[in-house]
Amino acid sequence: ARITLRQLLDHAAEHGYGVPAFNINNMEQGLAIMAAADAADAPVIIQASRGARQYANDVVLAKLIDALVEIYPHIPVCMHLDHGNNEATCMTAIQHGFTSVMMDGSLKEDGKTPADWDYNVSITRKVVDMAHWGGVSVEGELGVLGSLETGMGDKEDGHGAEGKLSHDQLLTNPDEAVKFVKETKVDALAIAMGTSHGAYKFTRKPDGAILAMHVIEEIHRRLPGTHLVMHGSSSVPQDLQDIINKYGGKMPQTWGVPVEEIQRGIKHGVRKINIDTDNRMAMTGQIRRILQEHPGEFDPRKYLKPAMEAMTKLCKQRFEEFGTAGQA
Ligand code: G3H
Ligand code: 13P
Ligand code: NA
Ligand code: ZN
Image (cartoon, rainbow, N blue to C red):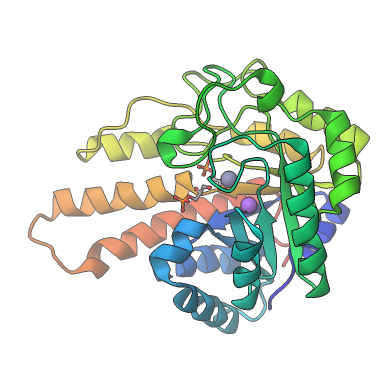
């Protein structure tokens, strides 16, 4: 059944678990996520970005979600808009059956200019007012995602701030977080603490200097009742990097967010954990393997099926690691 983000994260907070939010662009990813949720008996957040909506078409996405909910009636599904950039994008998602939207006012509508306080509060507050009339939840974001190592936003992934950012921008300020939640009434708050989107988050296994989990702990102390969201939370597992490179890929060595750091976050109010890159890598590794091992193969099902299975395995692992398993 469909569930709102607020309903799901309230349950997660009460029972002390986190919920992965997996990005979706097509049927294969939808089926893979739901197979994992079913196997783990886990509630799930499926999220579509603006790019996903353009790629798949809103009508296809809406009917795909209908189908997934019909196939798995016992699994609570929150359908969420990832990184909405204005009021209209949020409202059209709601029209298509999304039960939750992110109004990302940390950046201006262009998705690359860091926004000022007044812009973020006013646009987020407006979306919250409208969404709540329709019983839809809202995630806001305070602070700008980007690397504490380089000061850069994650522009190479097509997302995030342009140019060099200060630590002030890259780390959500706890005092401001308190004010922001009070003024906007968001259901969940995404914070910045050194993660970025995509595969190239860290040039070494992160420590507290480049992955500032202590910021989460401080915000949670000040806002114990607020559901926190970690973006850019793929772990970029070594084995997935190795499979891609073994079968002709060229990914330079990189590090993501270690699962144990996410688990530490879950102990301190993190309830929604956004993961896209890990699933992209899981699928791509298998597609590369099949095409290299069977160069005569040209039936898409022959490589998409192993790709789906690799994604299901990854999703199921995260449900188990985050404590979501068994909570459906
Ligand atoms: O926000 C980042 C997600 O990984 C979605 O990426 O905009 O390329 O679909 P996308
Ligand atoms: P990753 O690129 O780390 O998977 O992050 C995804 C994300 O934050 C989507 O909003
Ligand atoms: Na989001
Ligand atoms: Zn994100």
